[in-house]
Length: 296
Image (cartoon, rainbow, N blue to C red; front, side, top):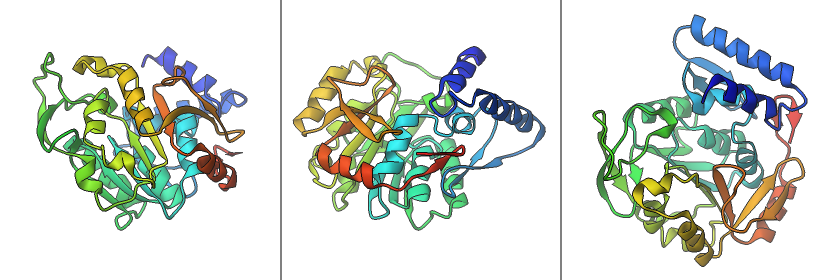
């Protein structure tokens, strides 16, 4: 992301629209601090949650500027989950969603991250938030069958499974598991899937998981990256519909849901919900959370 695009993203973010100056001050402070201070910087976040950040970690530093980088989806996690739930994070990266679900809300968690270096950062954030007994982390990718596949290794939040047409001199081989094999005795409530186009194999390995009545929501990144593997996102939407999930958008300010036809066109993520009345009741009953001095 170029500096101009980043500043536009910061200025137009829903939590910054009426506080642009404050947002730009946070941006400037981070730019200075990340250059002057060596090592990781501990950042306070939501409801006692914290994270380690360092220069260049876009998946976390944008939360410093905006409060919640992926505003509607992250707020949905805060509002819909309860401490009795199980949150599944497929493609956890360094743990933004897991920290929100498990530290800010108090849910149990299971986080998958295939890249060893990123996995180490994820574990650091788990320890920082004292979640060692609440969150299980697996250094593995997720797909349609157990085995190993090659991943890119130096693209931060954009790391992904190599397609047949790709080559990468820094590629690494990682273990792959299926959700069905890991979750066969578990009752997940919400699954977040961020796998840079590898969604179809993940879902193919989750046919039993998707049938579980405990699973009311799936947040899935659908940004067109599946084309590198020959996967069509319209088929993913159809697959989710077969499991009685429909696409929705969420407004955290009004706590309202709006039905979609297909995937979300406004962001890279699409929120899939089953039993929308049950979910809507949960959203309305959730306590408020303070983010950047604003209550949601």
